[in-house]
Image 1 (spheres, rainbow, N blue to C red):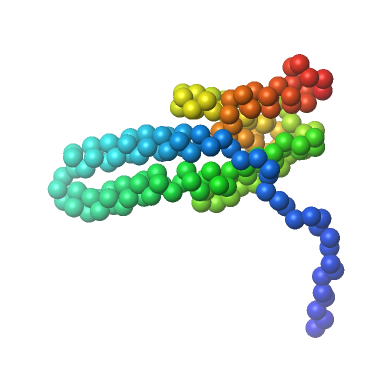
Image 2 (cartoon, rainbow, N blue to C red):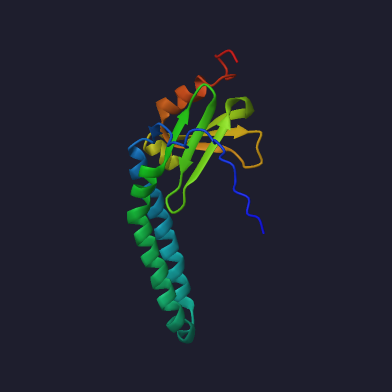
Length: 169
């Protein structure tokens, strides 16, 4: 039996992290969003537990406590980890984002594949003067989101995008 050794293939430079971090206000925004989600979850769990027969409540009670502990850990850990890992960059050739807190997702799209650039500001994001910039590409993987940018920066990124109104493209 002959073993064939693979040839050395130069794959280019290693993938680096994008240059820019999200706004520091994103931490507070994510804490508030997680807190609201946790309170709603706890309300549902307490309501379900209140109306359950005692035989069900005995074995579902510990499960509900585990869910609540997970919510508290998520409330404490997730915003900090997410802030350190979430980065973005737009160059003359591509848009690059990195997101995630338990797992990390890196997305790169060439500017030639960009179809639309949208800005999203939900009520909690407006409270913290933040916006998400969503870049839709001709890709089956879906849009790329640059999360929690300062609203002024998001407006500048959107306005200076190649092909956007006010900029020749």
